[in-house]
Length: 291
Image (cartoon, rainbow, N blue to C red; front, top):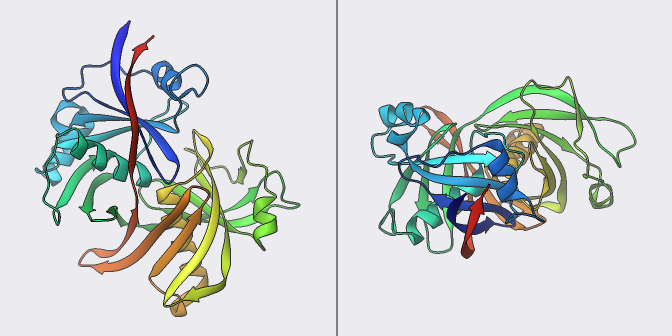
């Protein structure tokens, strides 16, 4: 048995088990990930984040070649034991954890580069939370979305923000609340690696003081329905702006069951980027015996 010292954290209810393994010495297996995330027999979480130095794992070599200052890599695993590219809420919680553990000591206005399987993600530390630059995004193929509670399948727009999403709009809050997301929505055609699925409705009115407001629920690939999905919030805002055209703003407020997140689109030399802002909290720490 291996004793693991961990910290439980969350970002708008999207929760994670975090631990430090700077040299990548702990043998992570899908079985161990599922144990840690089990809400009855383990700790319980939507995913596991290992704090490991980029130089210690193969995926980190490419990261350091692009950004030598990205010392820390976010080794993120879904609750079902599968590896994921990255997680928008998880990046913020991971940053908070690195600071709390004394592994990094950024100044208040510093941007911290972190390695992920989706590339380098820059995080800005602010007084009221964290803002992560999710980088460039792209449109992906459209798919039909079928879910329990929907009378007929709905069209969904594919959005890739480093991990895959399919966003579908519903008629109103009643339709959104009536969804039964205990089983995974069916996508047609089915993506080879799966996708996170967002169901979204606009607020009434949509625009308030130059900011667009939407509400969403999400079924996360490899997890199930979660209280929040950061990259999903960004994908939902991007999809709505795409549908709405040029009159849509670049600033969005996204309400999820666990709180609110802010999304912003902005121009860079390499193309448009999208950022995600929101809180991050560490709840408690402890020790658990790994099987």
